[in-house]
Length: 295
Image (cartoon, rainbow, N blue to C red; front, side, top):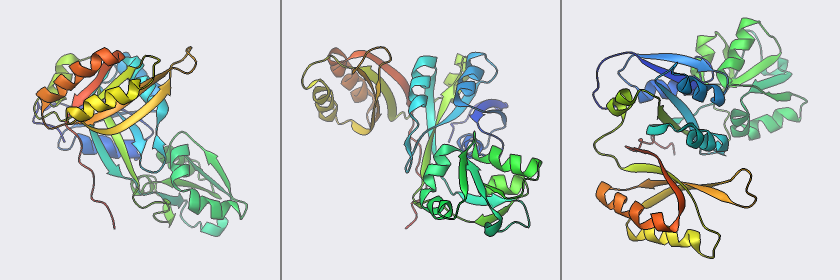
């Protein structure tokens, strides 16, 4: 994923524990590089780690093809002042895991991250009808670790294969996600070390950007912006609106643009700037490669 850079260990904050999908995404993004993973319970702690200078970078999930956008992370990114320097996609395969010797009939409770629970709703609905409780936790891998550390019988976790292997758990049911086309997009966030950020950010071949802006309250303001972007051949791959705190019925728009001509992209920005309010560039980078789609 990364261009050739100086060989040094890179500190990376992730949400979740070792064996989580965030760790998988971090190692995929930094393929061929030595990284030092710092685990955090929450996304807020991830951004705190960057703000405090405890880590050079972070990998955060921003959207899933089944569960949708992780909305608070858009606001966290904008409020932090840090910038996106890249992205990576992983195919998310969820499994039901438990202590060795347990069977599906032994399970009375299932724990996992709320997004993982949503991804596996069809499988879980069938178990709920049998009286199995489903409870939310901080993370898929941490749920698996808790079961392993405390030898908790009767409880299973939804987690990836790597977490099951790492914590010595058996897989009771494989690929339990409702949609096998289950992908999560992760963003690489660079921290306060600007020299480090430039080293890792794709300075050449940039073909994607994340923008944020608000609009004046008048008819057609959004359609005007979209029309200008279309005129400049910008491929709008994502649009997400979030309310402005303290201003009822006012919204911030977060958009992702793909383009083949950087100069034309900058011209498009100049063209929409007078139509928007508070236009910000949250990141410019090379777009990530989607994994092969299963038939």
